[in-house]
Amino acid sequence: MKALPPAKFSIGQVVKHRLFSFRGVIFDVDPEFNNTEEWYQSIPESARPRKDQPFYHLLAENDETEYTAYVSEQNLLADDVREPVRHPQVREYFEGYDAARNSYRPRGGMAH
Image 1: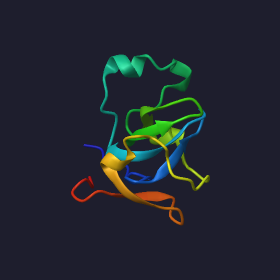
Image 2: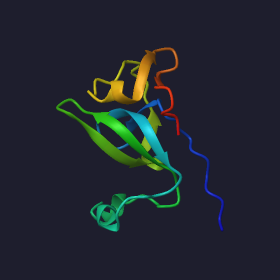
Image 3: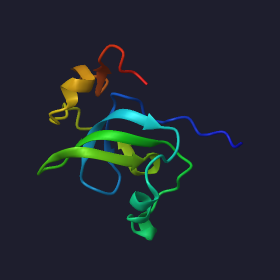
């Protein structure tokens, strides 16, 4: 069995999408793709990521709305805005935002 690459980003870290205009905080990590084939096939082939990499669950936001997103590692970058995420579910997963580290502290018992 092939060894999976370690996750580049961590739970609580604020990230942004490489191609699309949204940012979010990571609340869970899958070591490799773990969503439906239907979801995967709905991504245009030219933009479809590899399955053999970490995928991240985000509490995401753009200029219009907040939502959850499932994003491959290859499509994420560290966010440089250094502002808290406004997603209404942030308090369910995290306590306290650290601007210097641009990350949140997971609530007790929530770390993966």
